[in-house]
Image (cartoon, rainbow, N blue to C red; front, side, top):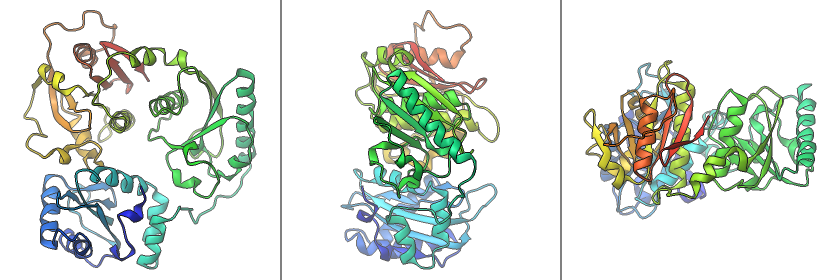
Length: 441
């Protein structure tokens, strides 16, 4: 999807207001005339209903007030910039918000558009340049055109080492018969040299910031946004390969060489060889079994991302453990009992879909509650703080794993759901299907 389908230059403004009320009014004033079927008062009413359910700050300086209005034919965005910052009144430290995106859409388009604009604004360098824009027209151009940072990084002595490591990875791939080379490109600042390397084989570049590659001539399918970040190299490679596997970019039978370095270290320092069929043997064994028919790929990816963030960051500096049960909800619900009042009960489905980035903090906060998140295959969170009960728990279970893992194994044996756990003690992530742990990293 193109951002210009939802955003026009006249709906990019420099905000005058200093409060949430004033800013919402400014953005609705620009947005409502282009909605035709919805007036400003109705738009603001829907936006505030959503805001009262959950404040829509998605990062320290970014907010995305949004609402679904069924009368709207096509989603539309108004984009506001405040160089001085506004009070959003929802943070313990009351940090000001500088970017406010107002989005209104229908049931079909709303979440994909919300995810698209959120992904774009995850680029901190883009956000910095937006706030330095001299005019709304310049800000609009930065948003809709391929982004190339103004800052350039000096070519230092570590870059030749990085180039040598990539060439060595290609030679190693030749010697081992690997079909693909995966380059974890966030280790280096300069990326242009990658297009000068002729490998004669399939190359996949994984990155947390695709915009860094807008100026070079790689095929778009070669550059993949992988939303995971682990300091341990082997774990980072494993979780990235799982992501590529789930996206169909690598497959059973492939041999893959990965070249990796610590993010922003300036060089690559590790080369990994992976025989996909052997290393993901259990994944393929369970792939052919009863997989939830209702589970869509973006939801599975999003759960892995949330689990990874919880494992790495914890909550307020403390490690936490949690359990996600996703898919086959009609069967799963038969084994569910609430430990607490369901915090998601009573809200519209669109307001509790984990694909909505403004729910991140809420999900992470509720992860501290004992019990599981029960999630439908389309991403709707049905409950949190949920106890998994069963008359016949899994009889055989790996020693050393606790109640959370036992619950995951049990519910995945009784239903077609996939269960994902985060261990509080080790911060390891485990995936369960058919009563067994089939992946662990």
